[in-house]
Image (cartoon, rainbow, N blue to C red; front, side, top):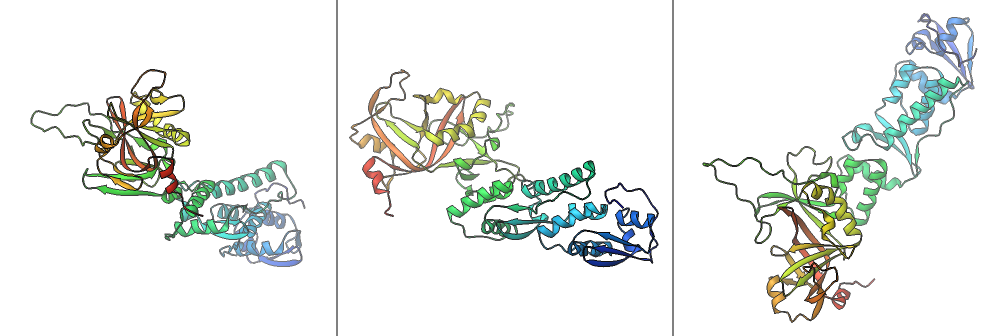
Length: 436
């Protein structure tokens, strides 16, 4: 008999009768009741068309068939690893066992080998929005669909060979991810946290990635708002926002709400941020404080006009544009108008509320510092609209690390410094270097 023939509906086998199946080198005796439990299948097809006392010879693995016998007898199929899982599914397709195929497709676990280590990952751990669908769900779905489609459409004598799922990644990192998913708290170095975030992206655990992204969520008792501090590089552009302007005027008997002042002499609306997935349940977006943690931001103090600008360049500029360009364009603000010399973004800055350190010394009054210093530096005059750059007396400070809010008001933007560490020159920068 060819086992690749399509099944034809037959009546059930006699429940009390025992039937003989020789699978590989092992003989199995199975009742008609068990064979009928997942039918129609190739066993019921064969014994309906042949002498019930005959023996059906099958050239397949007896070890895998032990699992199938457990299933036919009503037991839970106890699968140990990805190899057993893959082979059991292949034989479920081969023997045309529809219920077993569905049970394996809807298993409570993902069976996978990561870097040579076997894992039995509960699907409930990664079922939340953002963590699902993930790498393993897509891999398993592909396995099921490919095997069934090829076997059925090509009418093969047996299912095509299929390798068990294997992921060439770090098993230690994957074990850490499982520990965090189970509620564990790990003491992570910045380097290991960065590695785990990369692993989350590979496995498409996007919610877990956001849980690992370093940030602080704090209540600001002065401004009476909740703020989030996060690296500029970790911000997702889709989730930055600004409150919609109010269109209705207040009634005569209702006092007008006083706007919070984020910078001197002007009211600025701060950009907000809501982290994807992990902040899905909160009803508001938090005020965004973003960190620039490199030397790609520079402060320029122009003495005569008493103005301050921050110049952003390099990768920080690319990320800044990626994060804020869409939002600002929606409010009729073009970042291109603030570009200078083709590759530098120069924005007006406010330091009146900033906790500033210059050369590791706290600076309590920025204006007084600029006035008192005998400024001999010549800096670019960003207030001059001339295409030809002009040099004027001023002060240049390179920021080693800084925290900012982005304020928007009447089609203008302002970089509002919250905290910053700066050096005033190469010698002072050298002092920040550590011996290795």
